Amino acid sequence: GDSVTQMEGPVTLSEEAFLTINCTYTATGYPSLFWYVQYPGEGLQLLLKATKADDKGSNKGFEATYRKETTSFHLEKGSVQVSDSAVYFCALSGNYGGSQGNLIFGKGTKLSVKP
Amino acid sequence: DSGVTQTPKHLITATGQRVTLRCSPRSGDLSVYWYQQSLDQGLQFLIQYYNGEERAKGNILERFSAQQFPDLHSELNLSSLELGDSALYFCASSVVGTPSYNEQFFGPGTRLTVL
Image (cartoon, rainbow over all chains, first blue to last red; front, side, top):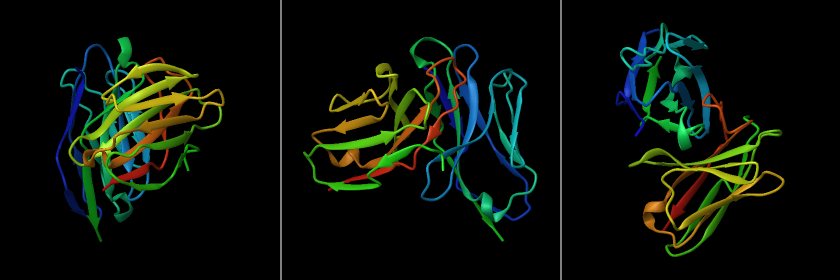
């Protein structure tokens, strides 16, 4: 079945450092891909999305490009801030059969940014 | 604030008991999803309802059931509770259940502790 694999954390960075969180997926057909963020004590918020190959999702300085050839959707940010400390989840939504609509998540990567 | 509300915020109960978690979707959203977040299993899709009808099922145990009412709020019923059911339960809503790209808005979650 469909699955998402993302790099394990925790990841600890200094403020203004470059961030990459790797995410790869396995899916039939052409899923939509998402990054969600969970701040401490809160629910998940959609950070960015891409619905077809070569699409780039971006929001709040974060970017991720849908790479079909490598089945990847890596999250990047050029300069992280302390306020970016959170857990980041890569997810996909299939586009066939009974899987339509529901999200399949990776295990999450905890990011801590130190001042 | 996503517009999705969940009650209660915290629930502490004993093994063998039954509990009901409640979710109110965003105004206008017809689809409701339930997810379980636990340390060992990560975030897992449980079940989806669309306009009162069950649309998709994930890794939901037979001891668990859900329903969506005519006013579109949803309840997740967990019975014969076991220690391993302790987790954070999220509800999410979206406008429709298909097509595959389907932004879901998450509630703050209900933390269930089974003692």
